[in-house]
Length: 125
Image 1 (tube, rainbow, N blue to C red):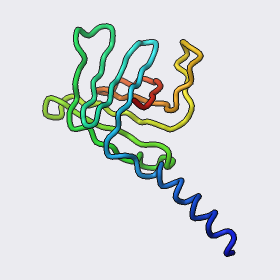
Image 2 (cartoon, rainbow, N blue to C red; image 1 turned 90 degrees about the vertical axis):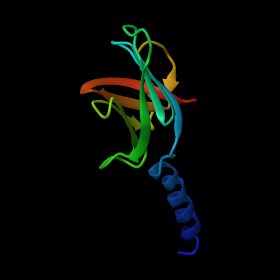
Image 3 (cartoon, one colour; image 1 turned 180 degrees about the vertical axis):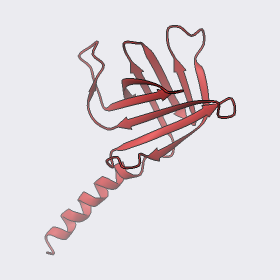
């Protein structure tokens, strides 16, 4: 048992890095068909797509562990216009391909923007 204890402790410590997401993230996410992009900079989320003249900004972004999801998943939520418009990103730390290139990103994302669901990939900035 004494030989297993150090290994078990290292294993538990490595899981805790995923279980408690950082309070502040800096990430870039994008999706194709339709094309969209999200920039996460601390507590501000900027959403952009080809139809917009300027990106839409959401404030007071907060990070939470996704309820019922594996420890390597988390969600980021924000709103604007006093909560009338919302954005939620459900992010999983797993390989992701954007379908347009050979690049592999470290995160998959499901974006829910005012009940419109889109899929994409993310990377840390």
